[in-house]
Amino acid sequence: VDPRIETLQRKAAADAGVIGLGGGLPADAQFPRKALVAAFLEALSSAGLPALQYGWPEGLASLREKIARRLNGRGMNVGPDDVIITNGAQQAIALSLELVCRPGQRIGVDAETYPAALDLFRSRGLRPHAGPGAFEALYSTPALANPRGTSLDGAARAQLLARRLPILEDEAYAELRFDGALAPPLAATAPQRVFLIGTFSKTLCPGLRVGWLVPPPRYRRRALRLKHDSDLQSNSLAQAIVDHVLAHDDFDERLVRLRRFYRRRASRLAAALKRHLPSWRFRFPEGGFTIWAEADDVVDEARFLAHATRHGVSFDPGSMFRADARTTPTAVRLSFAAAPGPELEEAVRRLARAWSRRREVRSVTLPSPSPLAAM
Ligand SMILES: Cc1ncc(COP(=O)(O)O)c(C=O)c1O
Image (tube, rainbow, N blue to C red; front, side):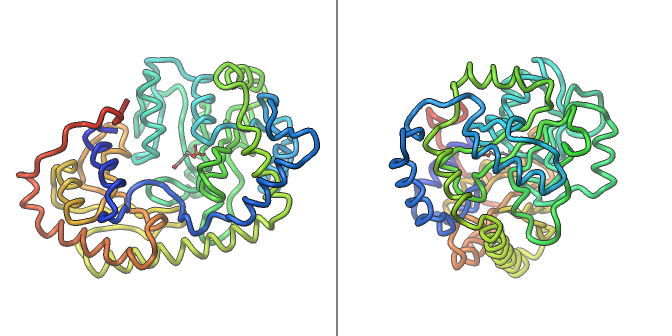
């Protein structure tokens, strides 16, 4: 991410006067706080205190078992030993990448994709590229894409598989598909070359940093080696908490509630966009947290972000999501998840006001980069 953009986002996040439509944060009102407190207390009182002790690199057996069972409900055929608990989906992407790509190689991505994956690919010396070409591996989010909130249809999934390349299949948002059945992962069809990646960040809470990786069997030992070398194991306490929540709460019922909640939020944001920014184009998402919107006019997007934050709203500029960091066509990703529902309308009103004064953008000066931005 452009350090100027990250600096603006950090400033906006610290400013209570700015409504944040950026980021992929869940609604904090949806964190199951009571269940988490109960799970925490339980973890600290269970015999032998395994939640405070070292564990194995693959992670807690009972949690792996639950994840395997859930995946098998979607057409996979895996056991607990096929699952590795990771520090979020991000670590699962990083481990998979290390197993299949070398610096200088090309990795295929969607036209717009998850920015921290692009950052990771670049910092590993890879060249992410959208569109046709020769690649070493593909990174894809077939179940539900970030930022567009779309899923791949059967033909597109078959096309991906037909390329016969290793695929990093990122299902971070899969379970937050609003309606309809979730297709089996690509990994169910091609378990020998698909790395299946998932997380509890979007459905429980990201602060626990619990995700998973199901690598193809022949990569499993090396994945565990890499995991061990980098952090020995994922956080025992966090794993115990998630395991307890899954054992005692009806997680599927929770997902039903979350989907309903986020669909309502999406409708609210979509209605506000139609009302206040009718010239912007977008498609209603099939799930997830965000709407991707495009506009015809070209603006300097970092300056437009600075300008918008002065009007009290922030967002994620389109270039963050593109492998070539293109700023055209002008696009923004807007989250309907994190800001309180009633603020969405006001946020879009502010965005529309900033957009109507986009002529002023040229004279906006950007802050000097924060020392923490784009490290
Ligand atoms: C597509 C995608 N993959 C992975 C992640 C990272 O998830 P985690 O918090 O589990 O590392 C995100 C977070 O926004 C995401 O959008």
